[in-house]
Length: 305
Ligand SMILES: [Zn+2]
Picture 1 (cartoon, rainbow, N blue to C red):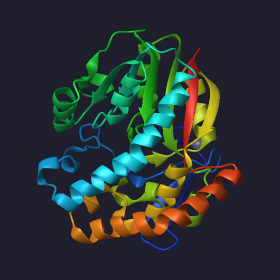
Picture 2: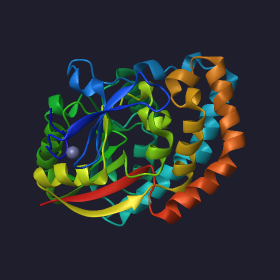
Picture 3: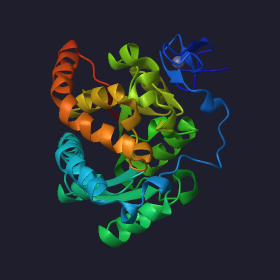
Picture 4: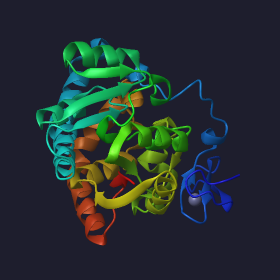
């Protein structure tokens, strides 16, 4: 058994702190966490968002929750991330958002002057993004799309890397798609955060429904990027509201994932309570975590050598 990021063989099993039946594996060289699903993975059944994407079935309260979260949480984050990317790549540059989901982030990058395209493996999402947002989205996985080589100034892997069953193969493809000196920019949860040792298996990124195969450490990400022809340029902490959000939904574990809270009322009520009651303590915790120098999610900027 090898660490999929640093290649070390010092992989030891760990038990959950509260859920004793949970087992995961920790690389003792780079601190990457690997879930059993990674070892039993099947390339034919990638993580799919199809089930989450059913806007038509949402009642008024669910729609309102989606709307408020988008307006006050997700969209400000996307704007802040777009501005970080603008500092690296000139406006008008070509950008590929891998796993662009419902396209809102890609739309913001387009508003900021990028020539953006997306890829997505969920057909309902592709249809929505093409028809409602008018964006150029390729349907399929990066491995099957045969996109032109050296076309892009930047490839974004935002909340995607930890879902990959073959991260090394994906990075090799990303490398061929980038122009010389092009950027790969990843938004990833990391075990270096204070939230991993505090929450352990109750941390939102470790939930069973997360679809994550692993959670990397910064050292692990650096190792796999360097091995695949990239030079690390910068790490940036995620914004305070993302740290606060991660803290809040880890405390209210039933409300973490849309496939839980958008399909049962208990989850939805937890979600709404979480937004109201935990935002303030969440922001205080986030401030503490940022002052301490970590955050649960990080942005990694690396450049093709
Ligand atoms: Zn490792």
